Picture 1 (cartoon, rainbow, N blue to C red):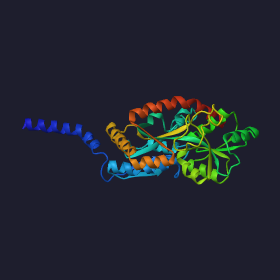
Picture 2 (tube, rainbow, N blue to C red):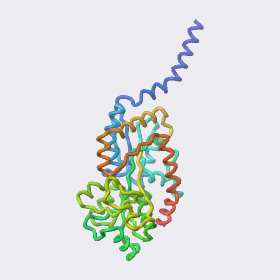
Picture 3 (cartoon, one colour):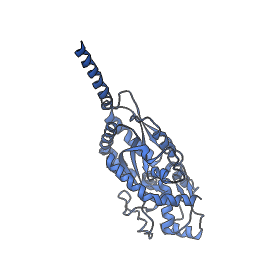
Picture 4 (cartoon, helix red, strand yellow):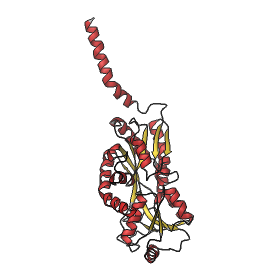
Length: 328
């Protein structure tokens, strides 16, 4: 009897130890939905790319993957929502660098509910180079035309961005600094509203990611004056870089988008999601569509994504300080 009781106790203890492992191995549970947050408006570059990836993640994970837009406060609303979510692998976020990093790098927003340690990077998905853009029928034919107009009318030229301290805002600051001009920065809540304002003639120019521009360039509704990159973009070889356009001091700027989970998510779940994202980026139809949008797939696993994120923090801290000074 005593021996039987000891075995029962030992067996119960063993089950208690392996139960969490078994639960994680069962991830994701059939019938559950994984919600991925896009922290910007529908119709922007991040939203479009997330919706392209969602069915591929569904195929790999065997459960529905839902996209929910939570824009506002330069992505802080969406990021804070996920930071507070249960770390069980069912609430994730498409994290956009450097915008996500700007929140905790800004000393005036460091009391936010989102911190660097609030998220675990799952994997990097793609990169989107930025460009300086005007309306298709704009009087500005070249980047020099735009710079000359800005110099002739300091603080008058309206340049739109996707949000305060979003990547586009840093691109606008890089344009001002590198071209030695002063513009009127207009911050929107996402790339969609920003582009609509340009097309409607409400602003003079934008600094915007290529993922939001390709179809409009082909239709002639916008004119891309220059790429904010070190080399010409393979998807838009006719567009010069800012250096080629005569302004080598304009710093290259781009967005890098990946998937992240709330801190505390078990490593087994992170690994499962990392593998699913990697598989998704290998899909040939996705590669073709992302190329059409002007995006570059650049998968990195969780560890590599962490290292990449750390480098972004170092590079953008001075630009965050410049953005804050501009706002005062």
